Length: 222
Image (cartoon, rainbow, N blue to C red; front, side, top):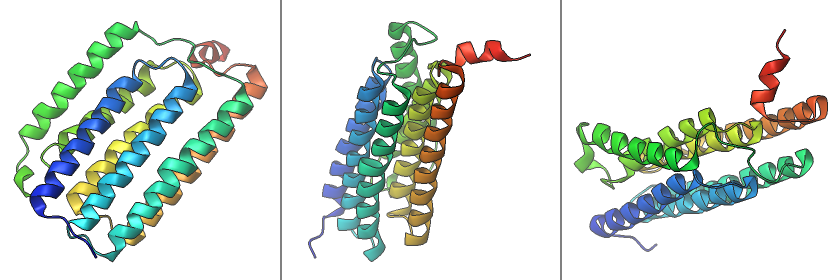
C-alpha cells in the first residue's frame, strides 16, 4: 500500500489545514444557508483528505475506514440532512447577523489570532503530523461557536455547531493519527443523529410559530 514520508505528510496536512481555515473564515460572510451547507460539505471533503494523508503516512488499517466514514458522514450525510431541513422550513437565506458582516469578519480574524497564540504556547506541537492543524482546529471551533452566537435563525446556528464539531474532528484525527474505529463510529452516529434531531426540531419550530428566527422566538416567553 502506498505511503507518504513524514515531511510530505506534514506539508499536505498543513496545506489542507489552511484551506479549512479559509472555509471557516469565509463562512462568516455567507448570506445564504444553502451556501453555508455547501461550505460544510467542502470542509468534510478536506477533512477526509486530512484523514487520508494521516492514513498514508503510517496510520493503522482503521485509519482508512475513517476516510470512508468521513466521506459518508461529513460530505454526504450531514449536508444532505441539512439541505432536507432547509427545504422543509422554506428558508433560503440568513435573516441577519447580530452584528455587521464586516465586524463579524474582523472578530473571526481576531479569533484566528487567539487560536494561533494559544496553540503556540502548548508543548508537543513538533511531535504532531502538522504544526498548523492544532491552531486551525482551535480557530474552527472558536469561529463555529461565534457563528452560533451571532446567527439569528435556528438552522444557521446548527451550521455553526457542525462547523465547531469539524474543528474537534480535525484536532482528534491529527493528534491521534487516526481515530480508533470504535470512536470513529460513535462520533459518526452521534453527528448524524444530532443533525437529524436538530433538523426535525427546526422544522417543528417553523410549523408551530411560522419562523425560525430565534430573536422573535424569545418574545414568546411569558
